[in-house]
Image 1: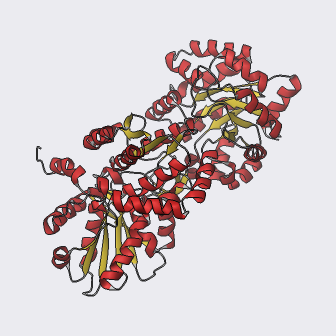
Image 2: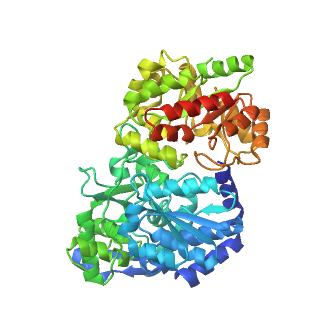
Image 3: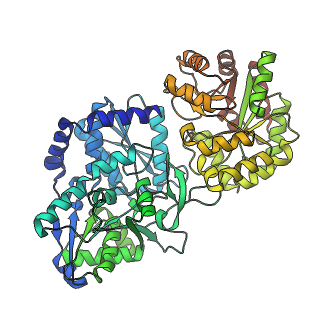
Length: 374
Length: 259
């Protein structure tokens, strides 16, 4: 609790100062490549229906996904708190890569915990982290995936709390983490709102984003929460189907529970054991979800749907072939939900899909599914 | 008054310190649980902490994590564990504490959980991932059931927090000796005596120290500072290495003599 209190105090002390914000904006612009484009996917829109579909191109960020927004924000905080050592958990490896990247840039020691199962699935990202100078520690306990990597990162943090900063990757974990990560990701929605205003002179009718822990979704939703005319759609991973045990849809199929210091919707059995989540996309493969998403589900402000592996793969190919943009499998879930919604769009309606990451890391997985030997 | 608080009062009157061994419920298996508990009681331990195996034991180091995974693999559930405790707890002269992660209580429902713990003969709870400020309903109901709640303080806790945690605890304050998770340490931190003294000064409740304590020498040192000593991983390891329990019995005997 003391470490969380220290973090809360530091966040309030530093993160809202003009000096901090200026440094962060500078890094966003010159290092991460922000603002990311808001792209009108004309052919994709035309083939699907009558409305206009825009893609928020978070995939064009440095390191290939929205994760860098949060990693840059938090490392500036860590630096001001005088911490010399950065630790992180990672599932697909995108957050691990973003953390290793900013640690390299700021010359800080970096340890990334990753489930052994995920390390085997995402060998390329493991090697990227190592190239960036991070130590990747395999986690073999439990299901050896993201939730177990998070357990191990928390254990490391409580052990080495004096000199270590835990750079969490999503809007999960104990307070104040969900709020901190949301605030650093909220740049996505602020930009989208201003960009669409400039292009169309109006707000979107729909904003669609995928939800694992939920950081890219909260990042784009936050700017629109107070705009009742904007329908917000969060898309979970239905894996092999919501009627099976193999999915990661905590909001659609879970119930309230406690994991990693937060109360939120959770996949848990009646005995209180946390269930293993499953999705073809390692980044959505988490049995919990950010507590703010739970609130937004209960309040009805956001509609949560779930999309299967198969639908995500279909969307992955469709976007690739109609726009020449290869989405991450995580983002392909948002694309799939957007494709279904597109059929109902009126000619003057606008939908924004948050393209949270690029699909380069997923090529081996997709090839495997297609039976192609690379 | 709950049985945990009573036990600490008796010990205080007798000028003795509490020895609290920890075992993992369902490891190596549930049929052996009565024998383990009876063996501990026969060695003269004062309270026994029984861990409830959990999929995500955040506060535990490798030894207890592995024991919990073994127990889960062998099909140990909270229901089965409580069922196994029931016949032995009533004849045991030692109050039983459950160490349990909060999701397991939450999924069952607080009132039902407490009722079942009471029926199984449990006397107290240690919930490493539940701070007192989030324990409102549980605190109210546990008092009705006379089940003690024993919250945790860590070396990073400031005075105000130690006072708050101690006041919310109805048995003892679980004082974590080290920064980090459970598991034997070759050396306890040099600041430990000062830290335990600080907790004792601020706490209206007895102070038991756990995490990291493995050897009789360490236990003796800590028993001079605190009202009670918890030993976990070393005992769990001894059970894992010799399921005939001879190793456990001799370690527990040596610890008892030291405390």
